[in-house]
Image (cartoon, rainbow, N blue to C red; front, side, top):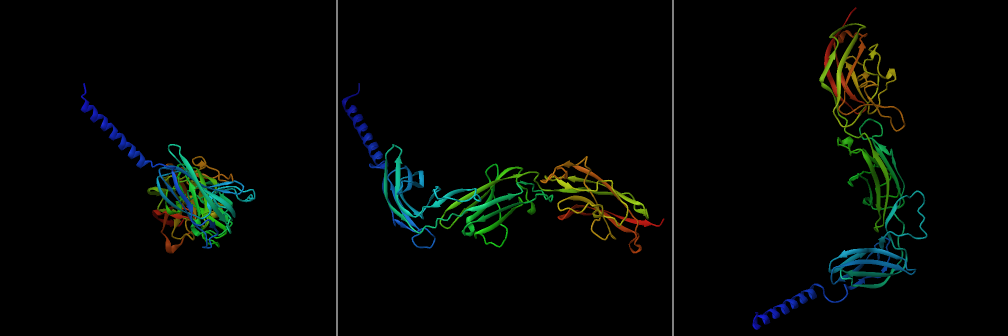
Length: 431
């Protein structure tokens, strides 16, 4: 049985603990509504970027953590949010306000068919408003404070992006000379800061990839036509993004903070770094001496060890050039930017690698039509091709007899990837 003195001690302890808890609660959650004060320093705004009355300060104090909204209502009762349902800790707050609020629509809005985007932030139209700061705490207690605000001389012109387009919409960054770059064009309807225009790609995983503006007549941010180009980094030797569906975004922000966004779609297919070589640098020529008029033939193997398909064009392996004066162009197999071919060169050749061959036949290559439906043939990643051919040696230059012949792997209009491979000294003999 508990004696009376011990019972008294317990009662006193309980009372003290209760008092301490009550004091702590009072300290942590002081009495009164969550919003203590709210004020706008200068209720007359002229947001137009001229440096006079462009900004005011909105201050408020919270007794305890609360969900906060700041909004404005015009004479017709239309509401415009500056902050909506934001969680804030207890304390003092001081915000700059330049008249720009969350996006809204006006009956007079007519942006035209050229604008297909979304307005994110815009300035309040000229007029008289009531500002409201409203707070609600965790227990459901709430209160709202308000006051007047007048907007005059507002620069309400939005930084619209019109005629936004991407071409081609199916983009293949692999240096094959077909759809290797995506051109992005847009027009700005007003001048904005140079940093106020951003164009970027959004990958399927959400990663943003910036796209650089091309030099032009317009300065960055100036109203008018602007052009961007995206090569996926392939020209710098970077691995392009993986194949898939991407979103191209253009965002603008003017000096007031009005913001606009437009977007369109872009697909990447058959992208990758083109990499190939003549396997082991081995070229087998048929002889080191040839009777004039006879054919010097060769055999070699090409491997695509990169991540991109390699476009190639004829003539097919096995073709024989009937004269040293013949060349691929004379056959109609003109040099094509981005195409890969094997070439044979000699000391007396009058042009670089005049005799050229495709990296396979139509049966061994992969058919991938281009964006216009024209057939294009590719040596795919991991694939090898045996390339053969020959040239009839019908022209003797005594001062260069014997002369050297060699092979090259050519990425046309890009580089001779393997140059002067398998050099062979060949004598052209009299009949």
